[in-house]
Length: 113
Picture 1 (cartoon, rainbow, N blue to C red):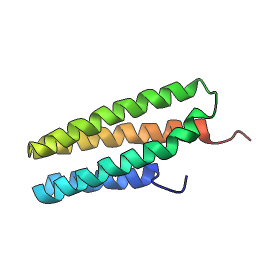
Picture 2: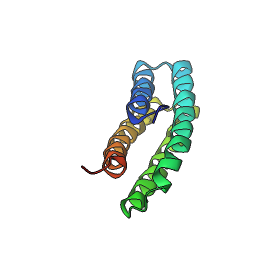
Picture 3: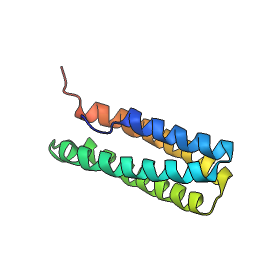
Picture 4: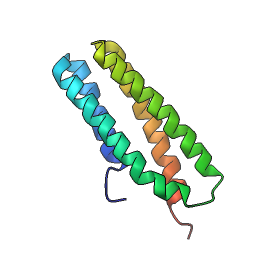
């Protein structure tokens, strides 16, 4: 994948958390917007790759994607409400989910040798 990969999304999440920790609401809102855009782009890029293989495990990947999407929506709502502590907590949760998602995607999408 040439576009937005999991490490790039993790970097975006860390920038969101840093803005929340620093108490910078304007920066937080900008970083959340960038994260949501990057996530949408990533999903579109990954969608073609994930739907091609007939792996049973790909359903786990889809479930994880939906859970991450819900978590990022909660993050956006917390950001809009200027709830810095909640943003910090949700961004940590999202990072854990994305790390798991990255591991699952790697297992599913990497050809066996």
